[in-house]
Length: 295
Image (cartoon, rainbow, N blue to C red):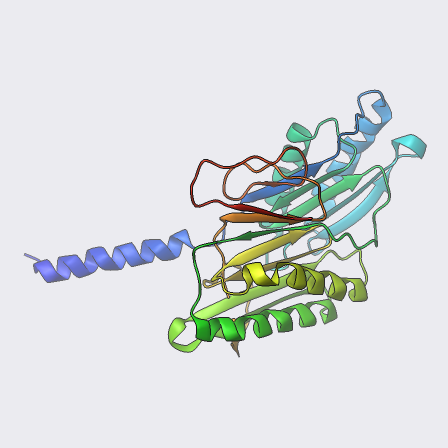
């Protein structure tokens, strides 16, 4: 018979492994933004939208995870863009893009301006040209109660700032790095800009996100910031996939619990990870969720 202490150890080991599995990166729906414009009177817009979404779905995953195009003429013209996170495989990128399209068509069927965020990808389309224009809209998801050790916090902002500085210089304007926090483990950071904007605007975008949310994210073990032109991720576990990076000296992590929105009038959230940059602000029944709005 197996000794009781050994059995206890095995149960504990399985439990710890399950925690690791729970921290594995998943493609979660993070939010959407829909305009109130009505396209029902313009049949050409709907036809062009279908063509646009087909092109984004087909070509995006095969174009290093980024594709932008325009379909239609005059009032029926529509501009579209999709981008996957730099570490995501082509297959996962394709699946994420299809999910984003499904959400857009279901939740924003009458809108001419739509943005959809998932963990692994971003979809945007509009009847107005937005290519190459830095959009400052951003939302942050942080764990309000999961504070990091002071010795890690002192290194975290420097670490993630370096990630933000490096990303615009990379070929795909994407960068990931690891901070070795010694006895407190590792912290993982990632930054990415949409590839339609310039490297200069990419740098400004990431800097603005860090400045805007600095007091909110500074002492947290994990957070994510999603924007129309750039996004950042920080966790105390390896959240990325299909990507190889070496450890660096000194950074941070995330659990989706608080939502902060800037440069938008209001927010509607459903669940810990669902952000909506439009509509009426509503609370969440879970006590651990708190909403802070930045005008």
